[in-house]
Length: 357
Image (cartoon, rainbow, N blue to C red; front, side, top):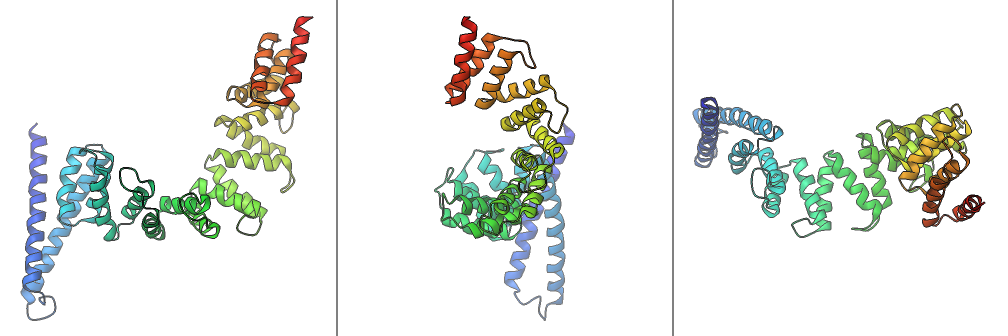
């Protein structure tokens, strides 16, 4: 108990010291505005010493606040950030804005949060620029302002903030909240992709593959699909697998196709699960195995993929890779019919005729 009270006392004294020192320095600067240039060597020295004291104390206080924030000790973090934010520390203002936006250690107030984040952003804090832009873009708890949001996001994106780059890329690509601008979208997708964002890498790969907004380039497309797939982007894994299996645009490689289908299938991608079942069914890129084929087809069917539901129904009917079960066969084929699968209706009729005999 004493230890905790002692820490609080140290923090309180440190925060008080910061406020007092900053006040003294501001007063000195106002009273002796030319002290740093000539005629006041002692004042110049005093201002330098005060600056060092402020820097050291602020740094220690800010670090304590960040540590408390990361440990979800929001009351302690708030105590550190509030004074520093009041005296103009950009990083403290950023954290205070985030805490007020999300209601961490204080009542949620998005209007006040925006105020703190704007103050920090105007001091050049890049993440604050992103947060201001995102809040204005979403209009969550504050009035939406897309043109202003784009300005803040652009400042953050130009400072290298990858989520801001991705927001801009998506905005310009979709064209839902602003006019569609494919060249701008590709610029920001590429910047985010270069920083390792897997969705940006996937989008960039798509643009190279389709020749959308730039010259078609299969080599670049595969390179970016590969980067995204290596980061477990399931759509990239599935696309890469399909391209290797198809062999139209790149050299066919069934083993590589199987590898990427398997990765995506384990990530619950239904089409990948279906294709993995197909590869086991046909013995393509892997040893033929009807039981494994049934298992993967079934996983895809359970996720509502109608082609898989049809094949699972057939496999239960024929006893392929599993025991014969006419009842389950009918149920699965009915699911495919209900989704509008035209091929499934004939299979369903055949199953019912066979059951009636």
